[in-house]
Length: 101
Image 1 (cartoon, rainbow, N blue to C red):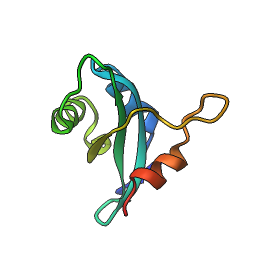
Image 2 (cartoon, one colour):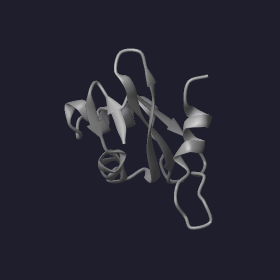
Image 3 (cartoon, rainbow, N blue to C red):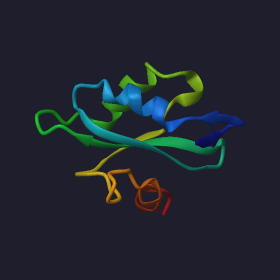
Image 4 (cartoon, rainbow, N blue to C red):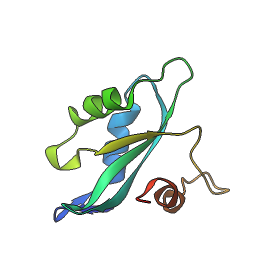
């Protein structure tokens, strides 16, 4: 769960919307610290080989389809998502890799 501006945001809801984009093969949404909101959602996306959209294009596309509070602040592309032996995405590892420096 991401706590943003006093609202509880569920990454799975945002991930479902992003999976609808034809270029998205896999996605995980993580919360990163934000001075304004406390936390803000960031999408970590694995693209299909056939089409890699610009980050701004995917960001706009997603934010047009989610609720106002659920808008993502950034899109980061990667080759694959880290997973445990059971296949669960390791979001703690993603926050370490793609969170603030």
